[in-house]
Image 1 (cartoon, rainbow, N blue to C red):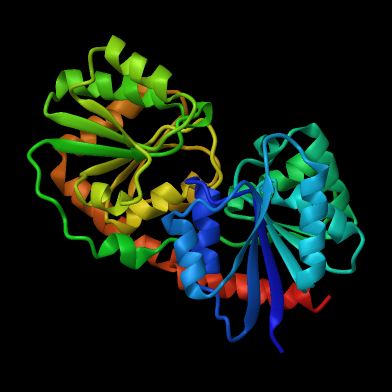
Image 2: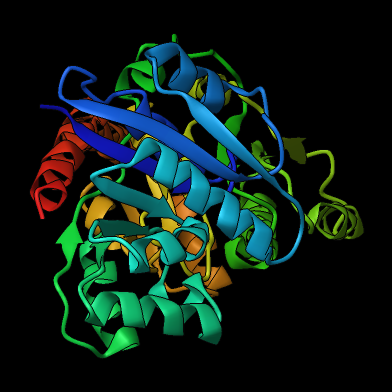
Length: 359
């Protein structure tokens, strides 16, 4: 008998959590699970993430929620969960809050994947709701890295079961793209343009390295509320010839295929899918040492203290001039990422669905 799973998330934007859900849902073995995705916010995005899920045979139900908290949306999720009658509910981001009423009034369990530092995941009110669900055993937190698993206990300070499953990556998509020849040394960054990612620190580090090694270019992929501010900052430093904001793109693999290095300057993270994708593309990594990053950047890149512009610039410079080290890191990236393949991670989640769906 198939295990019925409802996967609940806000919507299919371009963030790491949404990518993770798409990778998971489009790699489930539908001979063993009966799955559907519930998108709480808005309307269909008609993007690659949604297409992959639907083409795999997993339907997406849209609750059409607008901005701000909506009790009506919670009732809509409640009705949809009643209709589908899942054995287990797997939530992401604020999907857990909109599923909480149904979970509290039924004997089924919620698996909630924590995609970021637990303290930064929610405000105090939502953390209180999740604490109640955890301590009563109604919800099981799923960490995406060893560091996140440790921090869950520090944040919620209650006794509960917890699970650990890393983020999935589509290795085939990123590893099979033909490398693009180029003359300049190209650095790529992928991430939403928001305070967490600290793109200004990356710009500062690039500026410092660029003064010593002029033949460099930085491409920043992604969009967000700080795009205008970041562009103004780049213009102010007169770096617009060397740093470009590429916006939101669906062909990230093509940009990675034309790069020599991947850089991430975040102040906090869970387990960045962007790094896993860069590893699948066979790139060396320079990143701040935050969240679960140290779980995946070991012998394949440089870890730098967050906010340390000089150290970040020095790490970039070292990899620009040291081709041999760069090649070693690149080879290790391609090798280390294999255990995070989407099919493997989807199988691990299916075991969780069966385990908690029997309760």
